[in-house]
Length: 305
Image (tube, rainbow, N blue to C red; front, top):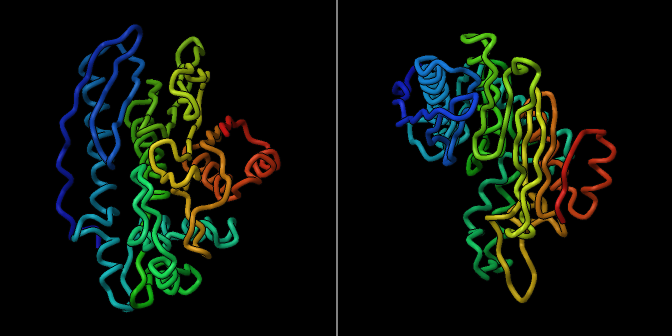
C-alpha cells in the first residue's frame, strides 16, 4: 500500500552553527525535531537535516491516523476485510504484537479508541462511566490477525500506532544517517525521544537534559550519552485534574480509565530508542509498581514521582 502514498514533502528545516556541532531543526510527527550534528561543514549539516526531515515525514505520512491516505487509515476503514501490508508495516505491527504480549495486554494499539471519551487538556473534564464503558467492546489486539502479507482488524475496531511510531521514526532516521554519513556522530531528538548514531570523535559524550515534570523551577537532570537510545514516558503535559486527583493520559485498556498512581515521568536508556520507549511505557503502565518493574529490567533509568 505504501506505493499509493504521495511522496513526503520536505518540511521547512533550519541549520545553525553551535560550539563544535550544528543544530538542525524541523517539525514532524507533532513534535519539534532536533539534530545535533558533529561537523563543521554547513553543507553536510544541511544534507543530514534534510535527509532526517524527509524520512520522518515519510513515516508520518505512512502511519498517521490523521491522514486519510495512510496505511493506518486504510486498515481502520477496511470494515473487517484483510488488508495487504508491506514488509515495513508488517514489522511495525509485529512489534505492536510484541508490546501487547510483554505487557499482558496493557500495551494495546487498539486502545486508541478511548480518545473518543478522554481529552487530556489539563481540565477537570473526566468522562462519565457510560461514555467510557461502551468503547471497551472495540479494544483487544488479540482479536486481530497478522501475517507477513495481510492484517485483519474486526469491524468497529481501529489501531493507533502513535505509542510506538515516534520511537520507530527516531531509530529509522538514525540508521539512515549512519549509513549515509558514517563517522559523523548525530543526536536524533524527536520531542525527547533520542538516538545517538555513533560515538563522537575523541569519545566525548553528548549532554542531554531530562526535564523535571514535578517542579519547573528545578534544573533538568543532565545525562551524558555516548551512543544508544533514550526515551521518556510521562504526563507532564497531558493530564486531567479533578477534586485534587490527577488523571494520567496512560490508560488501562481493560478498564478504560487511567492507570492508578503512575510516576510523573520515566526516562530509560537502552541500545535504541524503540527499546527505551517500550520499557518506559511498560513501566508507566505498572502504575504504583513502576519502580520495582524498572529495577527488574536492570536498565539505566530516571524516575520522577
